[in-house]
Image (cartoon, rainbow, N blue to C red):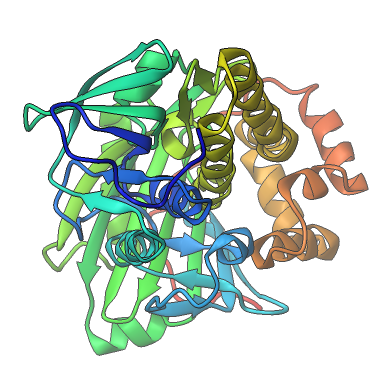
Length: 415
C-alpha cells in the first residue's frame, strides 16, 4: 500500500501508517520525516506540550547539523569557553576556535520540533500515554491511557529512557547512570560570570562529572555518575553547587533521571516496531550527550518507517527494519564504541584525561572540533595521543576518587 499524508478514515480502530510514541527530539524528528515521506502519521506524547524535560540543553555541532533547516529556536547562550576542573582543583579555561555549543531549554526545543512535525502533516496528540502494544499480523495495536486502541503499520518508540516500547523490543544496556540536575535563577553579577562559559568538572566518583550551563538569568547545573550510589552522588551534588555559588537561590527545577547506553548487540526493532533516541539507549558513554543521537536516529527511524509502510510483504518489512539497525550501527554504533573506550579511560584515570585536555593542545583541538561538529568521538579516539593514553590507562587499576577540594571555585582560570 502506498503511504498517504491524509489521516486515516474514522472508525472503531483506524489504521495509521506510522504511530510515533514520544515527542522528544527523536520522536518529533521521526514523525516529521515519516510525514514528509507521505505517511499518515500520529505523534503521541504522554505530557502536555510544552513540557519540562530534565536535560542540560547543550546542542553540540552534530545536534545543530541535524535540526531541520530554519527551525525557530531560542538560543539562550553560546559557549565560547570551556572551563575544566578536577573536583574543584586544577581549573583551566580554554577558548573555542569557533563557538558552536548552543544552550537551550529542552521544553522549547521539543516544542519547536513537534511544531515542525505538525507542519509536515503529522497529527499530534499530547496528554496521551501508551499503555500497551502488540503486533497483530501486518499492523501493531496501540492502547492508550484514554482507552483508545489504535492501529499502525509501523510504531516508532521514542518514549525516553524508561520506555515501554524499549521493553517490548528488548533493548539491553551496557551502562546505566543517574543524573541529578537543578535549574537555578541567578543574579546579574553571577550571570555575567558564567555568560558564554560552560564548566565541566571531573568528579570524585568513578566516571562522574559535574556541569554548569548558563542560560541568561538561569544556570542549569548537575552531576552524573553510575547508578548504585545515590547517597554519594547527592553529597557530590551539594558540594558542587556550593563551590559554584549556586546553592543559595531556590531551584526552579530539582530533578533526577537515569541515562542508559545500549549494548552493541541490543536490538533496535522487533517486527514492525522500531526504537530511537533514549528509548534505544543511544547515548554517549562519556559525556552522556544524547540529543544528537536522538535527532539522527529519529531521522533514520522516520525513513525506515516509510520504507516498512510500502513493503510488499513481511519479508520486505523485516528487511527494511534490519536496514535501520545497520544504519544506526554504522553511524551511531561506531560513535558509541569509541565513547565507551573513552569512558573506560576516563573512569580509570580522570587526572590523565584532565591533563590531556587542558595541557596538550592537540587534545583540546580535537575536543573543540567535536563540540563544533568538525569531528566525532571516533575521530578523537583515533588520534595518536588518545591511543597512547588508552594503552597506558589499560595497564592501571580503576583509579581512586580524586581528593575533594574545600576552596570555592573561582570563575576565571587560565586561558
